[in-house]
Image 1: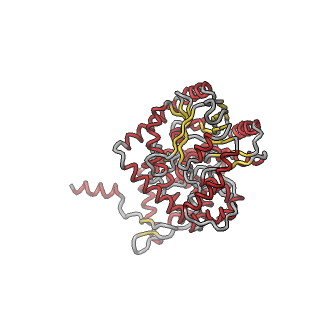
Image 2: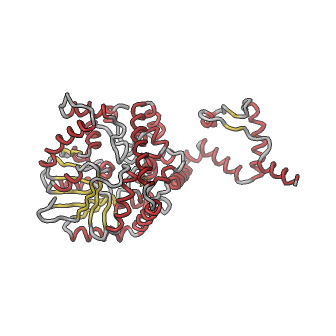
Image 3: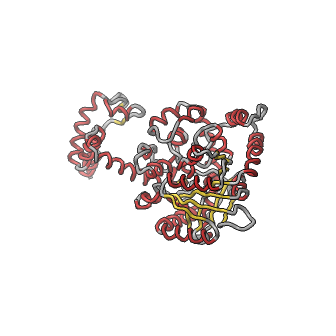
Length: 482
Ligand code: SF4
């Protein structure tokens, strides 16, 4: 799919297999994605191996997050009190519509027609840009990758490197067209210089900025944002008004806890030992930075995840995207196949839950369950465990409907479950299978073709024929020889 076609394309319109099939045809995008993820993953492996206490940091990161989620009401209230005391305003938004309403009214109160933005996937999640544009306000992305996405009318495919699927030549063509720079070169410094010149005037002129945040610190009411380009620092310090939209799961108890995440997040996200820009701010300070500061705390489907004990760990995510870079499925398809703001393994568990399992139901199946995501996750989210939990949920929901109950798939699975419950039944089925497979087994002892829906398995792999003797029969024979 070209960038222009992507423009028309909204999230959640196709299931994963359909979208992935399309994207697998695009060899250029696949090449871009594979190259970029391999580079980031290589750097991540190198810098995480440098730390002798890497596994301890992962464990500590997981425990602090798990503890905070267990007492989320307490820490959010503490954050609100401290942020308000420091001169900030805290707003609570139960869903995307409410968050958009709050932010729009704050921008309108300034009579602003433009806002500058720091990359925030939470604003993508609520569709903030579209909402502002529909109300006559132009949102201007200042992160280089987000600017590329915005100019190309594209969609992010990776939440740390949203334009990872676009290469330098494509960016140059876009900047030449949109910034009216026909002689622009394609060296990284040429493109960075063009973006810098384009954005600097906006930083100095526009009075309202919108950001996300990586962490909210409960014991001080501080907000923390890490970034690599310095665009964030500009947006956090130059405008008169700053609005931060943040998911409720981003709160951590204290400043001391940042010590863990400021080591694991940059190493996992970009393979850097430290982010070039780490900003923390607390309310407002007269004469220094924005004089009006708002935090919009977003629920938007997070509370039900919190209530689900087996899936709660999903909310521990610090959005480093290491699981995307490690995932063999993401490597092949890229992020757009997930039809979601949150792609890759974390997207496969987060998106369907944020949507109350109404959309993204194919995503928990977009995984080989190889466990690579779990191995790299800096907060030890056991993604395969949650994937299986969600698959079970989907099956049970389907079985509760008449169509699901009588679907070929359900009948087949029920039959298999019936056989597996009793060894005698299983042996009988194996004996029958041995007779039935005679016409299917090829000379090499494998079944290469099967009829009907069973053919889905043999389409891409051979199936070993049922052996003449089962393991139990073999074992009984061995024992009788002793
Ligand atoms: S699930 Fe873990 S690895 Fe994936 S983005 Fe979240 S924190 Fe990073």
